[in-house]
Every structure is written in structure tokens, then in C-alpha cells.
Length: 385
Image (cartoon, rainbow, N blue to C red; front, top):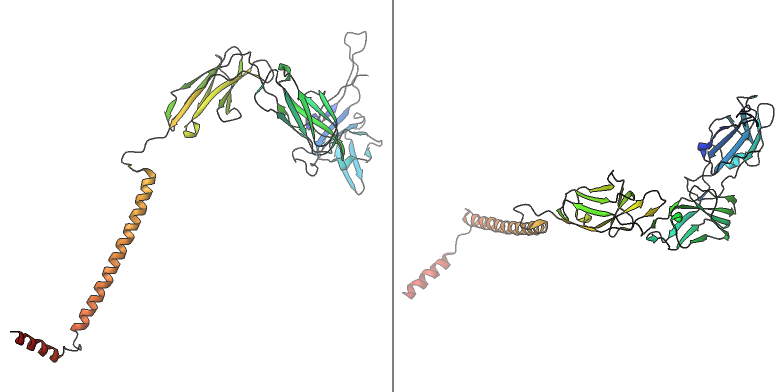
């Protein structure tokens, strides 16, 4: 008997499968095609608390004599509910739709059904410590964070069905140590666990990358043009090169934990990075590294640095004070205008009041001055003479 295994199936593996064999002692004479089986893989809704993008995985394998019943219909009976789908038809199902239920066909005989490892538990997450600055020979710790207690936790290299480490009876986090990092360790990693309550095997975590620096390789060269001191709004080009080993290049800026750009090299082994319309925020020190050709996640050491200084544009002609002076001038101008307005208003009120007083004195009904007073003034003058 020959056994074929599909690891980590996804809905893309949904299909009809069959096999044949070559007859012994013949020149590759094949047998007839055997019976066919359908593998159906669908995604169900995510369990409570799990990320929606990582739902329950339901794998249903239905084996039947397709030649005898081409339009086979599978019925999943569940209490008062029935679900039907034809052979090869796409339909969303959940674990609850299948678990513990009978599956029959309408061809007059039962169809064999197998429920393969439904995922009933949310995915774990994996972190790397330290996550950067790892060199050959260093030690690294990978931590698998669990949403629930687990019977076991396993560490995998990405796209490898065989686990490389395992921890048993874990509560909330499993630590895996990699000591004396080698080139072959510079790959992606995932973790997976077997839940206790509810029981079930999780999907593998999102992969994390272990990037390793190999100081045996030469650092890349670097240049900056047109010059290191430029005005705001200019376009800057930074070139990095290494023709012998560079598969792709990374541009690093001081103060940033991760590369800010990556580029593939041209035929001469040079990668060109362009900074468009630079501002003072682009000022800083830049360096390059490269991923080593034909190897895992192995990188060169950082090369020499170049420094970019972006100079703000000078104020236009006639602008003596800049924005701050303009603001002060505007405020002072408003105060002066307010004071002038108050003065004009006060003078206007006084003039109007004086004019009314004069009109009142000259009106026909006004009371004349007293004669006694006039006589007294005359007498006083005569006496003085």
C-alpha cells in the first residue's frame, strides 16, 4: 500500500483524487484508474475570542463510487436541520454541522465520511528575542504565546511538517532556545499547540523571521547625490552596491529599528534608492546592508554611512520678519486701530454735546442775562477809573 500525505491542507486542496499503479515486470504498463475520492476543505466561522481571519478549519473527505453515481448528493442530518451539497460543490460548513452526525448519500448506500482534525482553538502567536542585531554564534529565544493551557507546544521551521522542538504541559507561554546560531537557523519559524479545554490542535502561528548577520561577508559600498547639504524639496539618490554577494539591498536610517526601503540590484550589482521632495525630517545618517545571495535569511554587516542635511528654504525677498513678526505686527495694528477708533468716537461725542449747548444758548426762548449783573460790571469799571 502506498500512502500520500497532504500537510496543512487549505481550501485550495479541495479536489477529486484518484490513483493508478504500474504493473510489475512490464515496461511501465499502467493499471486502470481506481476509485475516486473527493477532499473538501472549507473555512467555518472563527470561535469566540479568535481572530476572524483564522477561522475553524473543517476537512471533510468523502469516498464513493463516482462512476456509479456521478451526481452524488451528501446530506448532513442534524436534528431539525439538513445541509446538502453536490459532489465538488462549494458550501460553507462548520464543525457543528458535521460532528457526531451521520452522512448518507442519495445513491442508495452510505458514503464514507471522515472528519479530519477540526480546529477548535485560536491560533498562538510567536515572538523573537532579540528580534534584531542577531549574528552567527548568538543565542536566540522564541516565545510561543498561548490563549489557553496546552498539552504540548511545538516549534516548526516554516513550511516544514516536522517539528524541531516541543514543550509539554504549558500554561500560557513556551520558550524555545536556539544557541550558537548557524546559517541554517536563519529561516522563518512557527509554533502550534494542542489545547486542553476545549481540546483540539491549533493552526500554526504567523511566521517570524530570524535574520542573521554574517560578518564574514564584506559590507556594501554607498554614495549620495547630488550632495549631502540640499534645500528642502530636492530629490536625493542613494546608491548601494556589492556585485559578488548582494541579492537584495536594504536602506537603514539612524533612529529607525527596521530598514526604511529595500531594492533589487541592477545587473551591475547596484541598488538605487530615491528620496523625493525631501524635508528636514529626512535629515540623518543612512547606511546599507544586503541579503546574501543563495542563502536563507543571512545578511551582510552594515556598511559606511552618508549624512544628509536638508536646509529649509530661505524667506522670500521683502520678508523681514517672517511669520512670527507678521503675527506681532497684525496684533499691534489691531490695537492701534482700536485706540484710534475710541479717540475719534470720544471727540465726536464731545463736539456734538458742545454744538447742542451752543444751539440751546442762541434759541429765541433763552433767558437773557440779568441787568443787575451788567450794571454791576459797568459800575465796577467806572470806579476803577
